[in-house]
Length: 131
Image (cartoon, helix red, strand yellow):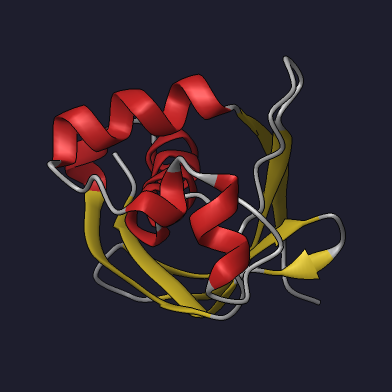
């Protein structure tokens, strides 16, 4: 049986999206305007896909013990992460399963990232080098 890694939960608020937009330069209105987001068929404001990916990457770094221990990391975006205009925002839950430990010290992990029980990332995988 594959070893499960401790689940990590990340809270995402509209304030986080504003900070991320400033840092990334991605000021797309779907990340801050409910009106525009709904006009294009979304449930409301959504988190940046790369922000969601970064949260899962943070989980991998924590499991690895250091950011530079992450050798490879990739995901596909499955669903948007709706972020309500509340103080609580929403939560992204990241879990992982060790799929393989190689002879050269690499650990291959399959990740699952969900929001409200729905997968928001697919084909999420990472390889780490344990110290």
